[in-house]
Amino acid sequence: MAPEIQAGERYATQVGELWSGLSQTLARLDAFALEPERLSDDEAIDALRLLQYRLHRASESVLGLSPPADAEPAHSELAAALSGARDATGDVAEAAETSGRRAVEPMVYEWRGALFRVRLARLRLTPASAVAARVTPALPRLRAPIQATALTLGGTTAFALGATFGLWPVWAAGLLAVCVSLLFYRP
Image 1 (cartoon, rainbow, N blue to C red):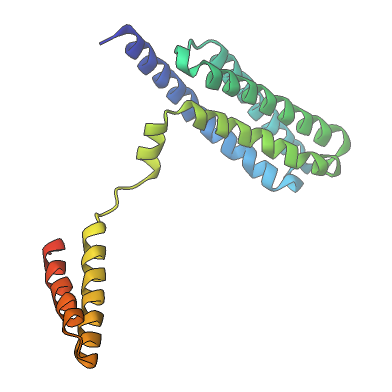
Image 2 (image 1 turned 30 degrees about the vertical axis):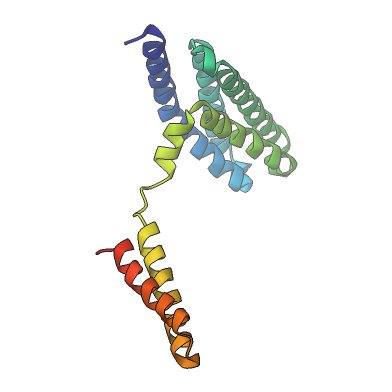
C-alpha cells in the first residue's frame, strides 16, 4: 500500500475518533442553543463551560493531526470552526453568567451558526464518495419497469385510437409497442 494512502487512512481514522466524541458535545450544545432559557441556572452554565472545554480539547486535537495534502484546506476549516464554536460558546456562557439569559438571546443565532459551521467543516473533510455512499441508499432499478409501463400505456392508447378511427398503421404501432414492452420488463 502506498504511503500516501496509509497516511490518508490513518488521518481518516483519527478524525473519526475525534468526531465520535465531538458529536455528543455538539448535540448537547445544540440542545442548549435551541432552549436558551435553560441557561438561567448555575448548573446549566457549568455544563456549558464543560462543553466549551471539550470544544477546546477537540480544537487542540485537530491542530495535532497531520492531514494529507488534499485535505489541508478542509482540515484548516475544521480547526477554525472548532475555535469559533469554542469562542461563541464561551461568549454565551459569559453573558449568561454575568447578565442572565436575556443577554444570551441576541447571541443564539450566531452561536448556532458557529456550531453548524463545525458540522459543515466535518462534512467537507469527508470524501464525497463516502458521503454519497452513506446518504444515498441503494434504490431498486426502476428504469425497465417505467419504460415498460410507458410503452404499454402508449401502445394501448394508440391501438384503441387506431381501431376506433380505422387507422391501421396507428393500431399496428400500438400493438407493436405493447409487445415491445414485454421485452423491456420481465418480473
